[in-house]
Image (tube, rainbow, N blue to C red; front, top):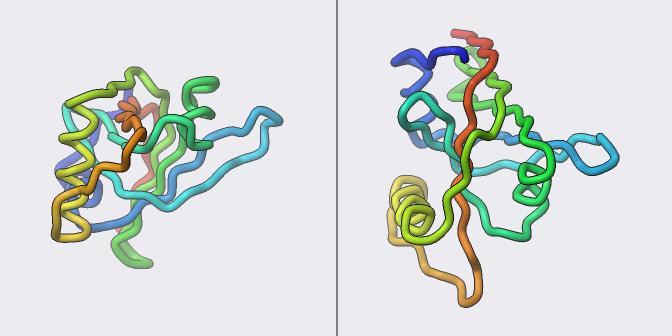
Length: 128
């Protein structure tokens, strides 16, 4: 496991968007821009069950995450999903992310189940 530094945490817990890359069933990459977070040495990705990245991560736990503050300060993390939480934990997490990124509480979507994936960093590349 690669260790996240304080500078890494600044990027992961700041107002920066991430590109999360998962693997489709045929092996092709699937990249999405998303909100990002970190806690307890893990990268946290929150999404809705049934979305492509959730299906991909449940089938193949490998992921890559790129967070860029500017062209001269970024972090690239490859890792493995080591946990997934649904229910109140995932809903509280998406609410916290909504407040950070949008400045307002998250509005639940009827029938939507949120899931928070914990990604263990296996390799980290830093720039800046």
